[in-house]
Image 1 (cartoon, rainbow, N blue to C red):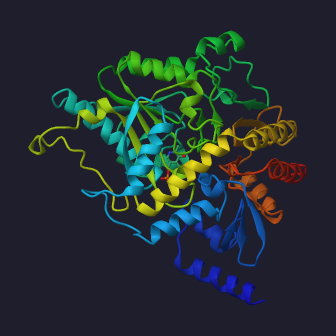
Image 2: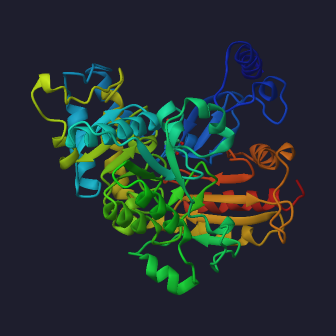
Image 3: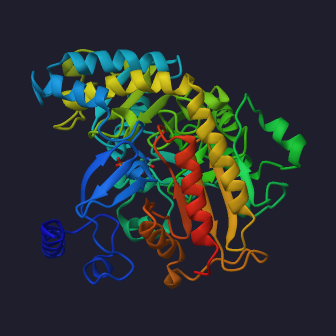
Length: 476
Ligand SMILES: Cc1ncc(COP(=O)(O)O)c(C=O)c1O
């Protein structure tokens, strides 16, 4: 009773004083489709609301959580660091957790990367990468600027103006167009809605499998003519000498609606960047730290990006932290006498926060054990078999998966591939039904996003898939 009174008054205050991200406040305040859920604690792969109801954290607290909540090793590492210091600046000072985490990260990322530049969220990791690429070219070529960036049509790299400039999701980005710098957009590698529609990948379930794929293999297998790579090549060729960098979300374009690329695309992009002398930025903010089944998605195709952006899972999903990693060649272009002004004048107050770095170090240790254990692979397999079943359902148009990352696209008419009208709020309605079943998901339009913690067990995944099947069996 006391609990529910407290929850009621808290959500009342919330509605009076807060403005939530990516939330239509009118719906939130009037309880239309949305209704405030006050989360009061977490344990393992579950969140609890202030009435004590338990929910499976099916989106890993926005794609960040790796090992669940209240993980003893992570809690201990943070407490230990808290006993020393919570925060000191990284501008002109340094500290042990920041140094040790960088050292560990460099053992796990592609070998060509040798420098770690910290910040505090995914957007700033990308922002730093963009500026790094721009300044690198200018300093290497006696001040000649390269003002063009290549990104993919439906890409998402964050919400700061630089990262929005690279984005291509109209709903989020179009309004800001007058503020944005120039980017050239290449066709996204999304076979399900490919305008050229050459492949045999339009079956309703697609799972990415890495294992050293090459574009030629996929061509042989499917007849695809790689129009998406050809589009990127056209842009790189036309703008040769002007492109600072091409940026991709390796293997999965998350916010686009979990677009899972065909095997070989990433390798092809990397090859094109070398051919046309553009830097390759891999934005692994969402795909990093085991999400796609390998530590980093770049590792699926043995690709070595020039710059790598990391955030979300870097601290195990506990605290804000991000990193932009570069090659030694890029780093060296910033060296000189102070008065040469080659310094990278970029940084944030909470860059390399020591508590977050301590959590990151503890998380990496757990991650290594997790990725080599049998239980993680079992969970991926359980997800696959559940998704295969769902893909046959009448309201499901397409299902795509890479590791423990999946998207389920709802359609009004499966045979015509007809989407629901936005006002139908199909994705939202399904997620609200799942909430009453003790599952928390957050859709991207009509794509249900499944991103459970890497610590999810086979039983938990089977339970999640069972609940989805149950809810999707009824008409929206
Ligand atoms: C690929 C990618 N890049 C960048 C970001 C931005 O990260 P943040 O929300 O931490 O700013 C996201 C967030 O979802 C992302 O998916």
